[in-house]
Every structure is written in C-alpha cells, then in structure tokens.
Length: 465
Image (cartoon, rainbow, N blue to C red):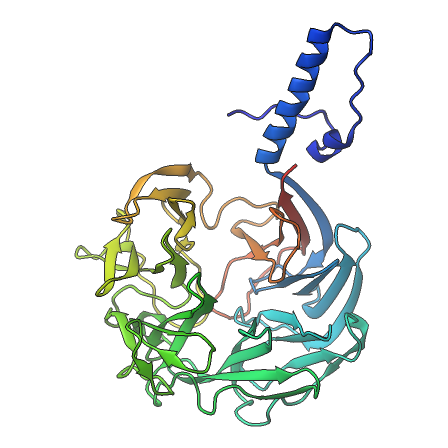
C-alpha cells in the first residue's frame, strides 16, 4: 500500500491529536462518511510506523566502536565517545530534548573492540564498563541512583582475573540480578568469567566457581548470548578460535541453562565446567579456514519455540552461504538458506569490515523471517519456509545500499551504525535506537591523513503514529 503524503511540518501523531469537528446541520450520510473516514485513518495509522529522530551530540567518526542506549522507566541513558574520543554519559527524560552530560576519565584509542556498555541495578545505581581489549578492568558506578554526575571509578570487582579484560557484558539473571561477564585473556587463549552483583552490599562475587568455558591455553570461545528463549532456557552459541587470525575460527558449539549456573547440552546432558572443545555440544564441526567467523553467530527461534542458530561458512564450491541450524527431535539439523555467488575470504587480526551480516530467525505468528545485508547483493528480509528454512519470498526487497554505502559525512567510505535499546521503553510497539556514522574498521590501527569531522549521534523513536 502506498503511503499518503503528510502536510509539511505535521506529524501523523499530531494529526491524531487534532480535534474532529462535524457541523451539526450536515446531512446524516455526510456525518456517517466522516466518522467512517476518521476510523479508517486511525486504523491505518496504527498499522503504520512513524519515526522521529533527535540530535544528541557530535561524536568521534574516525573509526567504529560500539555505543549504548538504556531506557529505564521515564529516563533514557546513553554512553558513547564524544568528538574528542572521551567516554561520555548522557541522560534525559524520555522524549525530552533536554540532555545532561558527564564525561568520564577514559579516552578511546584506535581499537574498535573498545565499546562502552552500561546497566542499572535494582537500586537504581548506574554501572558502566568499556574501553578494554586485553586491558585491566575499567568500571564505574554511580554513588547516587540515576545520577550520571556521581560516577566513580571502582578499581576491582572481585580482585582476581581482572588484568586482561575484553568484551564486557551486563545482563539480567533469572532472578533479575545483575550479572557481568567478560573474557579473561586474549584471542586464542582466554576463559569466560561470570560475576553477580549483591545490591544490598554493593559487592560483586563470582557467579561460577570456574570459568564457563576454557580454551585450555590453545583457543578461546566467542559467544552470542546467553539469550533467554520461550522455553525458559538461556541459550548460548559460540565458535572457537585458535589464534589472533580470524580465519582460525572453528566448531560452532552450543549450551543451555535455566539458571546460568548449571549448564547442559541440547539433549539435556549436564556439562562439567569449564566447557572445553572436547566436552562441548558441537552443532557444526566447521574446520579452521572453513568460512565461519566470530560475531556472526546469532540465536533465534521458530514459531514452535525451537532454537535456531544462524551462521555462515563456505559451501562445496567455496562460496560463503548463510546456514540455519535448528534443534529438532534427534538433535541438530542444518539447513542452507542462501544461494549467494560470493566468497568472503577473511583473515588476519584486528577489527575488519563486515561483508555479510544477518539477523536471527524470527517468528511472528506462523511466519518466519530473517533479515540480511550483503556487500554484493544489498539487503533485504526473507520470508522462510518453516519446514526447510529456505526463502519463499521477500518481506522487503534487496536495497541498493551496501554495507559501506550511503553517508552524510563528506568522506568516502563512511558507514552508518545503530545501537538498539538495551532497556525497556514500557510502551507497546515503540522502539528506540542510537544512530551515527564513522569511517570503516581499520584493523585497530591509526589512520593517516585527514580525518572526517564528527558525526551527529541521534536517538530515533519508531512506533505507531
């Protein structure tokens, strides 16, 4: 259906709030048609998706690094690196244009791994971590609830295995407790650590007595999840990697847990911690050099709540294809979903540019969909057959914009980025996200020559008009 044009300067939401005046002397049929027209308009408007964006602050654009958005009740918090690469926090009352900012004593270098993340505990205290890639712990906590101006550096959480941290993640446990997980060690040699926070004592302790996974000094695991599914389990998928060379990823693996403490295989067999390659539930034994990469393994669910792990690897002709592995009766079954005529031959260390990206398999009623972006074929969203996980149609057609195209920055090669809301808006059907632009990844090395000007960090609200 083609959208009707809106009057300039009038949003769909504003139209809904306008009073409808119907002259009392009008013909009854006219009144009936007028009321019916308003009803149809309201119905169409509720089905449509309106978008509103607001500028926050100019930010660093010389290379990509992750930012964070967190909605908590009526407040929205952002964490990012400003135009001078300084770690910065912002807060506003939701949908207000009045932002407050506070800078933290952390400055970004050239490493695209050094994203910033945050969480709020049950007492309302803000926790922030980031700017780490094999570095000592960087962690701040507010002295007052919801107060970005009272952040203080906390030098240690537990005090052990906190000198070489990477990939900090805050998450909510099954009892709404705050959990913090990270990799201790380096690429090809690292273990995954889990801590849990005691709100009343304002202290961290180990959630697990041992690491969740161990590469036994030979490799390390790169995770997606834990992600809570409709079955109540936390689902976790990962690849193992032998060295700093990203081509050495291998063996797509899986585990699940109801409490994040006791873990098991897909068949329900208990796993002794730490999980190693020898004890892991391997979904697909992709060998090193087989075309699988960390950061592109994603967990979704079909209409029956069955877990589906999406990833890519090389097919028999050496081309990169998207595969979906589903847990069915009898174990994992692997489906090839794409038919691309392209080989993404990645290798080496440092942050690289992404040639292929995709979303999880997602169920809306009985219909399955999966979004994708491809450096050669553009982007789109497939409708998937439930039985075969093969595309049967397109919910949205491939777009001309590629992974590296389309930019407001006056520099060639600028890339658009977004960060979803890690909190809850509390408004049905409403979604918030951050958007900004940078140059692409440069394998974590400084750039030579002129750098682009700062780009504008924006917050965008999408929802019923």
